[in-house]
Image (cartoon, rainbow, N blue to C red):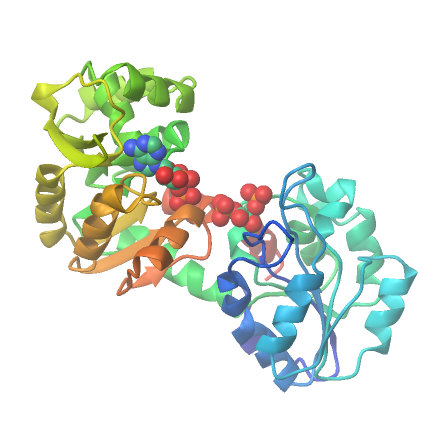
Length: 397
Ligand SMILES: Nc1ncnc2c1ncn2[C@@H]1O[C@H](COP(=O)(O)OP(=O)(O)O)[C@@H](O)[C@H]1O
Ligand SMILES: O=C(OP(=O)(O)O)[C@H](O)COP(=O)(O)O
């Protein structure tokens, strides 16, 4: 068990809070979505209301990526979202940043610059080595305690995620606490547990399918999206050249494992029984028996939706990751809309994933028991892994 804000006497202390506000951006560098910022309001408000001096640590994008940007827009948005004053400095751990942290008034917030502007933050370290990095070493001089609220980055072993717990009294924030509570005890969630794996990260999903089936975390795996097409392809169904090419471009070396899983768990993995393609501008559905077709399969068909929805009705827990089709085009958003709405009928429903969250917002879908702020982190936890951020917090409790 990690320590939480309930265990922290925050008043007057300088608290470093690692958040994950890595967000989609518009072409001119503005925030396209502020869901991850809103998620951290509880933790940040609680600390300012308790008179802490708060230094916010966060990343945005990856080096050389389109979304590798400063955190100035994020700081402006946090200033709107929080009652406390929020300042921003385009420095992370140099003397100027440390001086600003020391000059902070109780109950105010300073957003430090993107941690990934510094090379060490883009590498993996064990906690003891992470504690020796420049970022952790120098910030530890001016911080009294550390709060990790960055659940969505908790599967990374980067200095700002795992290093501070070695140097400072460390606590999990409210997002971290809620996510671990909802996702950490997956084996204790009611059975049958059904994992619906869709989207386009085919190799990752095949590996997740293996882990959750083998460990018994999932009773059944339902496949949709490119993942569903990949399982069909692996089972020997001739989908047509276009769909096969999407599958093979997304699945580098895991299709053999998919074929193996279908043989090992024939009763526990389901693949689509029909797909939807575009013909003359219209959505047209084809049963698997009537394949191959020339056009790419862009969604699951109605019979698949019905069959999977029936599985949800008897499910204790449903975990969904990845859209069931190309939801960006409304003709092919049917599978995603119907399956995600259907999943809310299960005893307990959990959804996660960056594109999945965007799909839910775009399609106006809600009513889940837990919507995770994390994609990779949520799935790692849902396969029973312990996350590096949690290991670091745990070891110092
Ligand atoms: N049948 C399909 N063919 C092509 N792309 C698809 C298909 N089904 C889903 N996708 C695409 O998968 C993408 C999202 O997948 P992914 O990144 O794995 O999701 P997440 O970020 O939620 O884990 C979307 O852009 C969607 O258009
Ligand atoms: O957006 C994130 O992960 P996600 O896309 O798996 O939800 C986190 O900010 C982690 O980012 P990273 O995958 O660049 O380490």
